[in-house]
Image (cartoon, rainbow, N blue to C red; front, side):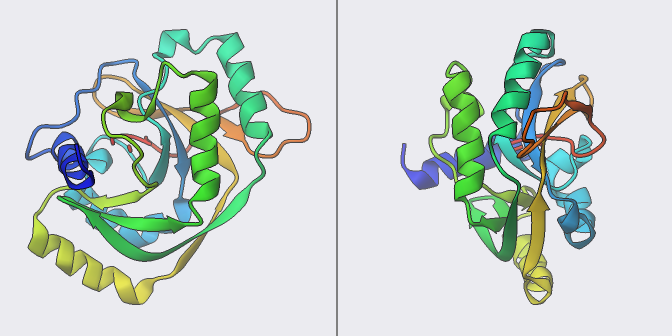
Length: 213
């Protein structure tokens, strides 16, 4: 499967008009909340991003799907706390839009810190590769629209371009859980804690790539 075929399959899996990615109750995802982007993209996402329809705020997916909720026990929480504490907070710039077929997204740069987070989790839980191992090595992306069609995506990109770049500070990784209808915040793991604290109850993103792919 080449890169275009992969992207087309991602678009079909995430597009509500083509049939959404099946998510069972109790499915979890790890994601980076990007609250700085909400004011810019929330209106477009509410109309054209299926993750937003199911409770997901602006986010960058670290790993979806992750462990089922019942498997996120004290041992797993401690492991996640220690794992993310070993990675320092970092800044991202979202300066441009890009596309997979059927998907318009903002490009986060640099990508290396995000890839490092995903790699750390998958090294610890190799039985849970990104997207179930279906799509290979997708670039990190903040989905703005995965429905509406090409003309809508062009209009959105034209609207966003003069309002970029946007800078975001990444301080936490959120664990969100699907309740069968919506993505719900659950736990939040700080980055860069010298001596790891217990995870905090989540208040932020819904995971998708933090919600849907």
